[in-house]
Amino acid sequence: MVAIPQTTDPTLDAVNAAIEVRGNAEKARPYLGMSGIGRECRRQIWYDFRWCSESTFDAATLRRFEDGHRTEDLEADRLRLVEGIELITTDPRTGNQIGFVDIGGHFRGHADGAIKGLIQAPAAWHCWEHKATNDKKQAELAKLKADKGEKDALRHWDPVYFGQGVLYMHYSGMARHYLTCSTPGGRHTISVRTNANEQAALALIEKARQIIQSPEPLERLSESPEFYKCKWCQHQAVCHASDNAPALPQVNCRTCAHATPETDGDGRWSCARYKCDITVEQQRAGCTDHIYIPAMTPWEAIDSLPDEGAIEYKKPDGMTFWNGPGHWSSKELHAAPGIAGDPGADAIKKPLAGNGLPQSQNSQGQDMPWLRADPAATSSQTEQESEHAPWKATA
Figure 1 (spheres, rainbow, N blue to C red):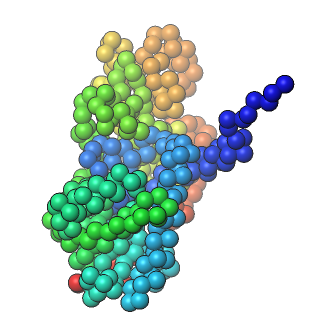
Figure 2: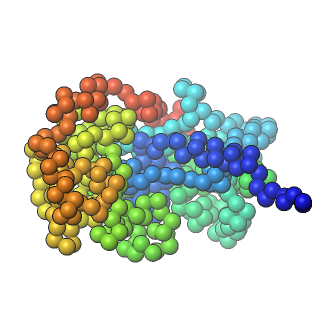
Figure 3: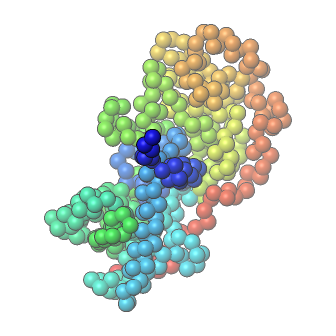
């Protein structure tokens, strides 16, 4: 009998599985990142900030992420081979990545480094960023550098990278940006230099402020769920939810109507229901009193019970239901968003609803252990970063 050759490698399949487990175990960042504020859709950025949807990536995507991180270190080592180059990749005061913080700690960025001694501009400090891209995208940058001029190429090439660059220049005080771009593995590298653009930076900061302070989702990029940019968005189901295709955000404090990002502290969030601050871990866990921000749902909010912390919704067919303690919980709605308001389901649900009081009160906090924690405790997820770079300089 002729053996049939294997077309797959079970060991490498196991490696990919392990990569996916490790990569998808990472939790959403607790702040709005400067690295993504240049994206086109404000609603998408707001959903990210509010932890509306789970992010899952396949092994191929996670491998690309890792390649980018490793290539950054490789490129830094290569730049340091040049005599006269001074490249700082960590804040010398903290030993951590160079960080910038604004808007009460909710808006943060982390630069790859600061570089001085470039042969083409030896006296000027530059913000340094490295990007690993595919051959096609790198070739686009090379063409734009030739067609638009070096100083204007980044803006035309990638608005997200351009936004990141002008913000890092704004917060560091440096007037120049040096971006190196390599193909996977660092096999071929090109560069582009960009001047500071205070007007663009301030516009992005105002955009971030509006997103952070908005209590409801901002405008969509498109009203059509079939729009090509929407089809690839991780929030597509929630953003374009309808009664025919109901979908609800994840249940956590950031999708709850009681929670507010405060701008007078280090990324502080508060809960109006219990009049306390909520740490990052508490925000991720949520509580049994969670009620959805109405604008996040596909239904019309028609009434509320402030004392109970409940909201009544009406569906297009005229059926109504309540979301809140003693009624349909957010976790129940998230698991089966189409079931609420169904007469049969409501008939079963009502006898089980209890007295309408929050479960935390019925059980002396057994279901809300975070109420027993010190609300002033610092979350392990909250990064302790400096607001300014030590090399604040003008080129």
